[in-house]
Image 1 (cartoon, chains in turn orange, brown):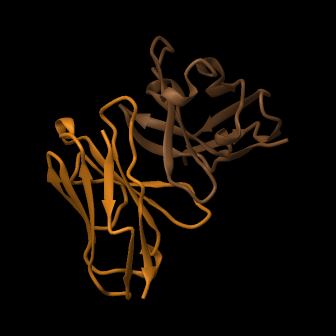
Image 2 (cartoon, helix red, strand yellow):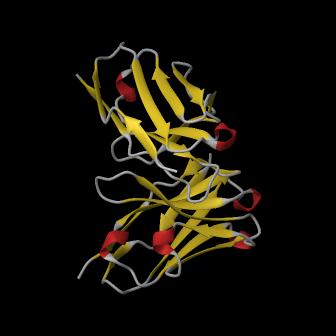
Length: 107
Length: 117
């Protein structure tokens, strides 16, 4: 399975809405699709699993949707700490592929 | 508070070996699968290997099969990655990850492995 994320870079301002896409080359079984956030110099952090379930302590401005081969991560109103890299992953198969990432940067 | 702390990274020559360790605190490693995930400098994330609670099942990405071995010592609450026949393309930050099922939930801060002559 190959996961393709788009866009590569998203240039937005605080308060704006961010929409990130993750497309799989084959259907993701059981919707075992996760999203991770990685801030500069930090380890990744789990945001969303099972395509749409927020992980513990993740603010509700983060939401996930989709099924099959097309998935979306939405950040409803960007906070300064949300400018980071975002990766999707199909965690239900071996190997467990990640997408190449989308960078959300300040406009 | 859950903490995973990696150690054992460093500079090694091509063809050399290195053993990474991961210690857990505030977290019982024995409860679930554990993984290693790596990130080459300026690049994305790559899952490397995982191991079942009792060590009976292990899986690897193709590029490390036959060279890397994942293991765990539940009595010591520790995870390991033995890396042999290292190549330049193995240069990366290696993260120890505590899974829930196969989901990567708890991440260490990573240890840098540099393979260079």
